[in-house]
Length: 201
Image 1 (cartoon, helix red, strand yellow):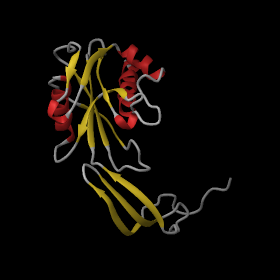
Image 2 (cartoon, one colour):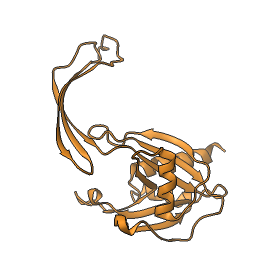
Image 3 (cartoon, rainbow, N blue to C red):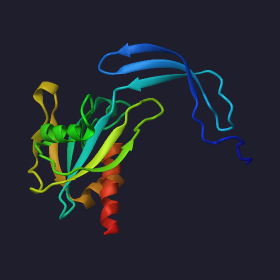
Image 4 (cartoon, one colour):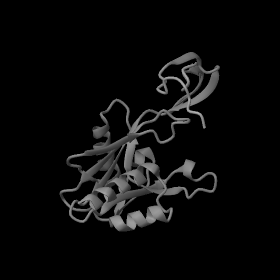
């Protein structure tokens, strides 16, 4: 296969027009644009749909001695359609509005699992679905100084949240990933990062 000629580091984008299709809890926008290609030329005009819900922050609380982790489970309608499971095991997360992502992680940990977090370690900032959504997720780890919480329920009634809180041994959580019982992307990333840290020690 012939190698493409040109800069191979494209940067130019020409947005020729946008149209707001939906403006509510999230925004949907249609854009007509051209972008630089890997051979240095500009593409023909193309149409793309953008789903914009803002950025978010997510955190995996864990016991630094045993590496046991705290996960939550709640109903997710988008994960129910297409014969999905509906109820997902996840790390704690919430939407970022005007807040710093670390502040979001701390607030959500308190609201969803009644946890006060200490120092946060940034793992990664990722685009979970860059083909359609502009959202970035800031993922953190947070060691718990007071040990793991008891299993229970969390969430805010006024936000219609019904959340199960549970602690898992890291090995069990990794087995659940392998078995497909944990299928949330940010959660898989955080658990695998913690597992890699254990392997490096």
